[in-house]
Every structure is written in C-alpha cells, then in structure tokens.
Length: 168
Image (cartoon, rainbow, N blue to C red; front, side, top):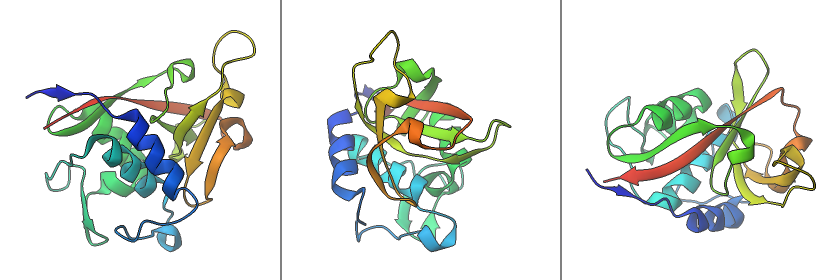
C-alpha cells in the first residue's frame, strides 16, 4: 500500500474556514458530548481525503448514526491514528516541540484521561529554545476557537498526534 503526504495546508485552511462555524455536511455533536474530535477528524480528512471504512475499528463518517467511534471520540481517534496500518491517515505521538500545523494536540487531565482535540493552525517562532504552549495557536469546536493559544487551556498534559501521512 502506498503512503501519501498529508496536506497540512489543506487541513489548516479547512480548520480556519470552519472553526467558528459548522460545515452542514457533518452533524454538530455539541449537545451530545462535544464536537471537538468531529471537527479534528474533518480537518484531518481535508488533509488526506481518505476514510477507513472498517466497521468499528476504522475511521469514517457517513452520517451522525453511521460513523466510527474514532471519528468523534478523543481516545478512539488517538487509538485509530497511532494504530492504523491500513487505509487512511496514521500518526505517532511526539513531544510538543515537534508539533506541526495540521496536527491534533489532545488535552489531558494529568491522570491519563484526554478530553479535547484541537488542531494546530499556526506555530509562532519560539522566543527562547523549543516550542512551548504559548507558541502554538489552535482551532477547535465545542468551545469554538480560532488562533487560541494552547497555553490558555486548563490542561495538565498534551498529546501531539503528529500525522505522518495516509494510505489508500
């Protein structure tokens, strides 16, 4: 299976277009648990254009009632991306200083529970040394945000899902 480059510019352009609104092609999950991972999945899809239609363990969206848990669930998205060796996007967890635009940076509570999936849309040059939370600007749904600093969230830990590419 061939590996293709993730289009980070397309993912960021999508994030910027829809961060403060909703694409009518996708259900808004805000009232039933949150829309952050749905939005992150839409951004990733904009950067690769390929879904994985395996029932239960894949990553796809056809409708609110015909989708995989990985499309809308924080932990399920992580599990799919870092474990995917088939069709669709795949990622690895990297340190914060290795984040790139188009990556998903999941926020955690410090006990290992992750609860939010914003997308990096800009990374400012660090003032000193390596990239830190103040240098990363994100876009997100649930609590809609565009160009919000990562440091402005009340998170005890971060998990960068660095998208490596996709397969089709």
